Length: 132
Image (cartoon, rainbow, N blue to C red):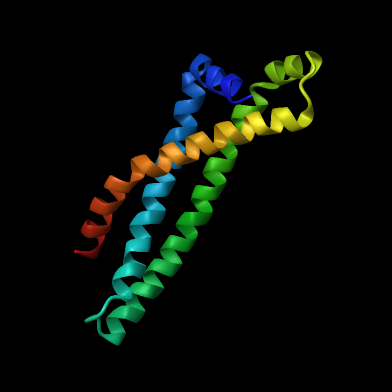
């Protein structure tokens, strides 16, 4: 099923890129605001600054995380719904529901890992810029 998932990604690069972009931007936003939490917990940061950084990171980062969750979930949902004919063909050819779920989850994990890895560098730069 993993080979089928990779072939499906190659056949539809636009859907993959849309989901990847959503995961990449979301991971960059979440990592950027988590840098504020990291800075707040470091030695040498006074209590007032630590509280301010923690509060700002919690509020903005929390709302950002919710927005990212819904953006990624909606792109994945659209991606799966646009593939109903392909999934129905797989069911008719003998694929079990568990195999189809593994294929879809495998694609989602591949996109999530790629998006997270790609977002590390921009998030580091964004975190530094945010703290300055």
